[in-house]
Length: 385
Image (cartoon, rainbow, N blue to C red; front, top):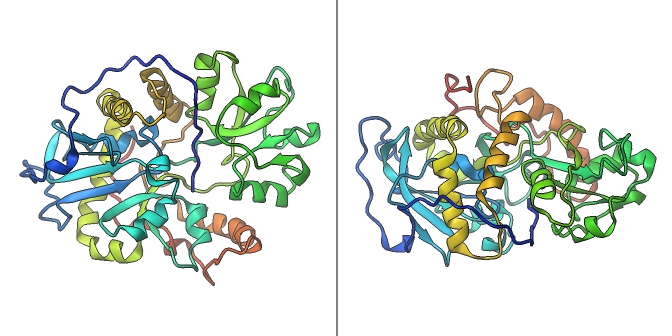
């Protein structure tokens, strides 16, 4: 389960809300007629394409909200946004529903939700989670990778530690590193000697209180698309930059927030995915080029859900900028946006399988990249310019 930070500090939100939002999505069952272009209904997609995220609405999910057309509805009790599924502004003949995760699903793993509710077509999966569950009861296959690099980071105070430039530098200083207990990447860091086990602390709860109380002496996990902006621009008790390194750059190269499904669902909707995945790829391109409309839907949902998640337009815009500045969303080595680098996944399996096996996870014997990811549905012509 990916744990996002609970930034429990009030932010003065400046929201540009989509005027078409609001209401109860459960009352709207009309399926739109496809305009000239992609016809997902004819391709065998369900009347409503259900997509499960792993956290509250945020810019990291912007490509999914980009799929939602005008006239969408919000179910604030079930934390769902439903609307016409559009591609490049045209209806595709079906609806799409984006579901919030995290607290909305009791912090359940998205993979568990896929198995509990077979109506969910695709949900957020990660390569490390897929490896760890490959030999168990919850195997998944990812079909498109919106993020080329996992946004997760370890962060520290550069004023306290001016010589620290990467995670491994924290070892020499003996810096305490807080993280969410059970995070697989930390097992990797300690097993390979990047960090000492004695300096790690699995008590991080997502709030900034411990970091602030340490006065810059401790490091902690976070997300490059969230904490650096929040701590410097919003958190009144800090208001200065943080240093950080992505865990990807420290050797844990799992794909994160990829869209995947259970094998039976992928097989059942094979013809649908051949048309849907390129639509998702195009939405990724459109969102980065002009994120304002999708971000407005995100902010509208945050406001209507009113569940304690605090998020504003400034943070959404900054997240998009960071995604591009740090190449978190970028073309794969084959030049395609959203495809998996099979060599990278293969090498990750070699690194991760022993880590998971040591923790008691059931890794499939002879696991190969094609067991957990596929480029079958990717349109290789879709790329960032």
